Length: 218
Image (cartoon, rainbow, N blue to C red):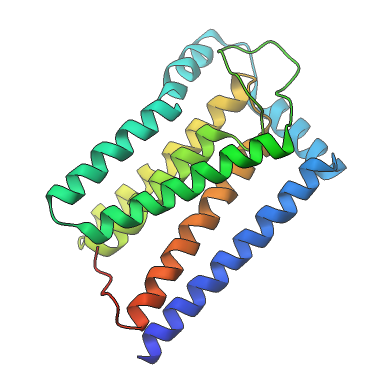
C-alpha cells in the first residue's frame, strides 16, 4: 500500500513539475523573453540548411506528424485495444491524446504567435505556438512508452522500443524547425505540454490504483 502511495505521489510531483515548466514556458514566449529569442536563434542556426537531401527527407518525414496521421493512428490503436479488451489502455490513450490536443488548440488561439517570417518549405496554416506536430507525436509516443514499460518483459526489446519511440517526436520536431514552419521554442513547448498531460493522466490512474478502484497493468 505504501509502495502504491509513493508511486502516485511521485508521479503527481513529476506532472506538477512539467505543468509549472509549461506555464513558465508560455510566459516566456508571450513576453518575447530574450531567453526564448536566443534559444530560437541558436537552434535555427544549427538545424537549418539548404541541403536538398535534407529538405527532401524533412518534407517526407514531417507528414508522419500531421494531425490527420496522428489521429488516424490513435483511432486505429484505440480500436485494437478495445477489441483486445484492453479497456484501461484504450481509455488512457484516449484521455492523454484528447487533453494534449485540445489544450494545444486552445493555447494556439490564446497565444496567437505568428509563424516564422521566412519562406516556409511546406504549407502550414494557423498559429505557431505550441507545435501541434510535436504535441501529437510526443503524446502518442509517450503513451506507447508507458505501455512498453508495463508490458514488455525482455530488457533489450524494451530499450530498443523506447529509443525508437523517443526518436520519432524528436525527428518530427526537427523537421518542423528545418522546414521553417515553427520556432524551436514551439517544438520544445509542444514536448513539455505532451509530457505534462501524460504524467498527469498517469498520476490519476496510479491514484485510482492506490484507492483500489482499478489495477494498472495495461
